Amino acid sequence: MMKRHLWLAVALASVCQFTAVPARADEIKIGVLGLFSGSASWWGTEYRRGINLWLEQNKNKVGDDTLVILERDEGGVNPQRTRQLAQELVVRDQVQYLFGGSFTPNVLAMADVVNQTKTPLVIGNSGTSSVTLKSPYFVRTGFTQWTVSVPLVEYAAKKGVKNAAIVVADFATGYDAIDAYSETFKKAGGKVAVEVKVPLGTTDFSSYLQRVRDAKPDAVFMFMPVGPMSAGFVKAFKERELDKAGIQLFATTETMESDLPAIGDSALGTITALHYSPFLTTPENVAFVKAFKAKYGPGALPSIASVSAYDSMTLIAQMIKATKGKKDADRAIAAVKGYSWVSARGPVSIDPKTREIVQNVYIRRVETIDGKLGNKPIDTYKSVVEPWHISHPQVAAK
Image (cartoon, rainbow, N blue to C red):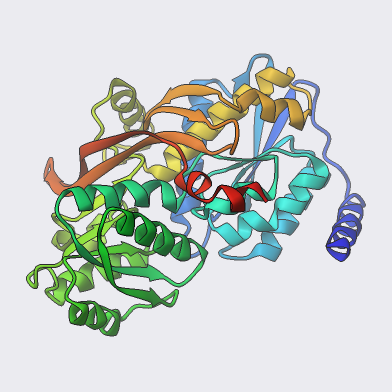
């Protein structure tokens, strides 16, 4: 630990040798770290869309302060690069706030920088529940895998599922999915027939699905990262006719609107749990979708990433107001603990104990909506408090 902090001090000192870019008195810089290139660039694009819509609606200002966004490309799962970019943004470019993170390893890599420079980081996406324990300056506006997995399993159990297989991608958030699915299902009286871990980057799911078929479950609880693995697994599930074998598929992020064209009709009927759907009929979401389409085109639909970015700007604005535009991380974080507002995703607040977002989780079913596939909300679990922190208090307290 001492070596790590010594390394960071040296690294920060070396960054200071760059020519600093001073901020004007009425200018507040926000560093945005996202995936703007590569196979997962969807995250960066959606972050940018959510941020730019918020800036347009608020004329780039919070009070008398003008907001300046500095984007940096994480370039994939690259903790070392992300840490370096965070250092440069805070020390050289003098940003007061950081937003972003698309994968857990990249978010964790920023913890030392955030802690030593006292810079609030609003986490747009990282599904691992323990992440916010790594810094008192971390606040999450995305979601955790536990948050969506627990309602999903409870819903499935309520609908009569007794015996289930669990299939997840083999990395940190996948392990959270296994734990959340397994613990919740067993508490509901269910039996886990088999647990299957699939290596990241897998494109051929035949052997893994055969293990599922052989276990003869009623259902599969799955987790795959958004993108090719999600689409590939859902399509393979249908192509290998596991549905005709009486096995129902339950998922979380795997049928997002961005992936549905690639999945096609194989996704029809899939039940998912997530904290947002662009087809929510609340006045706030109807207005948000209308504004999103007006800015980005009639075929555009907001996503969990664009909503997260938009809400993160709302949260950062609250910090700026509380600190009167000054750099004061402790006061900024204190100002958002317990803060609540109505988002496009529904009523939300920041848990003052964990700095996790409290939000509705919607049970959705893939249907044809206005001629296109979409996730129609069919049930709601209201004001879900991040479950891992509740069920693992001894670990969370460390």
